[in-house]
Amino acid sequence: MPAFATKPHPWGHGRLHHSHVPNHAFRWSPYLNLNFPLKLARKARHVDATATLPSDARSPVNFPHFLRALASRNYRLFFCGQAASLTGHWMSLTASAWLAYELSGSPFVVGLLAFANQIPVLLLAPFAGVLGDRMNRHRLIVALQALCLLQSCALAVVTLSGVLTVPWLLALATARGLINAAEFPTRQAFIVELVGRREDLGNAIALNSSMFNLARLIGPSVAGLVIVTGGPGLCYVLDAVSYLPIIGGLLLMRLAPRAPRAGQRHPLAELAAGLRYVANAAALRAPLLLVPVIAATGFAASTLAPVFARDVFGSDARSLGFMYGAVGAGALCSAYFLSTRASAEGLARWVARGALLIGVGQAAFALCTSLAPALVCLAATGMGTVLTMAGSNTLVQSLVDDDKRGRVMGLFTMGQGMFPVGSLLIGLLASATNVRVAVGTAAAVCLVASFVFGRATRELKPAPTEPELLNDEL
Image (cartoon, rainbow, N blue to C red; front, side, top):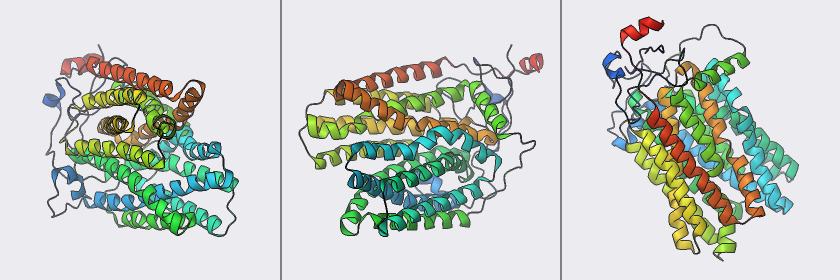
């Protein structure tokens, strides 16, 4: 008989117990409730679910339900500062892509630039997640944001001084990738310390997704105007300035101190412990295995959109802009939907539906012969990616123990880092066959992933909590 135990949680919900949990069983949180009745709610010790953290200052403003996480002062500071820095970051990425092609005249260099920027995240995010569990996350993320500012300043200096070359561009992109490898998982793990109420965590993650997609729409558009009027160097200057609000907001936060961790081990040993923790928790395994599959194959339509725009639809760059805009619009719709949800109950169904929507959208896109239906298909893929990625983020954050949050979010970030590898494989497949076959193949993988994830979450059983079971095994 397996051993089960719940541990009290500050918001009064049962949690995943991280020890002696076999692969076929795990500790479910009643807060999560993945589509089947749970027995833990009767046994867990409850407190007021609306209780706030000691450091939280609730706003007197009555925010709408879909913005309720903004009632926390700390999260408001983070959200406003991050909105500015993400917009600046997308401006910087756009300017770098423009310069890469301008300096080299090679599409390969443009792809290599994106690869250099993202591959460190794939390789190093799990190791960086250990830092988030060992160090003060607040101080760590302030330092990382300062490094982002310095990297943008370096780009601005070498560009405005006229000494920028392709090697310089690749080196600084790699440096930013190294920073991102530590910043991404730390930021994800840090969000839980910013929201005043546990029930607002899902809303905060959805708002972050909305902010990211708005920045993805606004940043490149503004960058295009700035490049034409002031040059790409000005984009880097504005990117550097955009980090001042987030750094200032972080410094103004009032956070409750985290309990010190006892008995720290070698970083590699702690990483191994985090991997065992995930391996023994099927509730975490399911979304953490889904994310890299979707990251690798769920963006095939967007990746090959330029080819479809010119060679399939016989159109120009303006149509390509409409195609990317459709993806962003669909993503915003899903982000708004997730922000209106009151809890994570039943969220696994929507994650599976998101992967299904990506597969169906890409399959239909592969068959399109004109722009109008293609825009609908791309909007569907945008909706599906946010449902899957942001929904999986919420599932994982709702279950993971705080002392392992950095390592687990490092694995989540590593999964997201499969995007450049997937893009490379999709590009190779398109070159060997054609773009329709490449997108259709990616769609099939997404459909299979949706089925497997849905089946895995349906087959998971709620853990018994009767005292006699505990006594038999402990």
